[in-house]
Image (cartoon, rainbow, N blue to C red):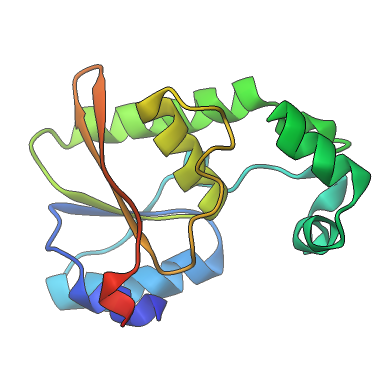
Length: 163
């Protein structure tokens, strides 16, 4: 579905992708259609999950692991041993999005990234708890409008294009 999403997205002024191969692959159809070369923004990589990297996060969440319950209750990534702190993650994602907005004023930018990054961006824009938007589906579209220091959530987790 991600490939279809990329083909039907609005035409952006620039294309930015994160660091995992799957985001580059998802961005490729739109980049080809627009004649753009994707660039990589390292700071839009997924939250570092410490000891839960490599698929253990989803497994432990599904199993109701005690640390997963703490994660939901405390709204802190770093309850996972070795994971990135909320402050570090928010600073990294917020800094990257502010740099992109400053580098591309008055342009649409398609960012192909990960669920944690999307959730963090939405939380920063809305003032919500850190994990309030942590459930973006693969292939969904979320939209922010960034004007100077003001961020506006236009939509979150839109999947209408996947029907």
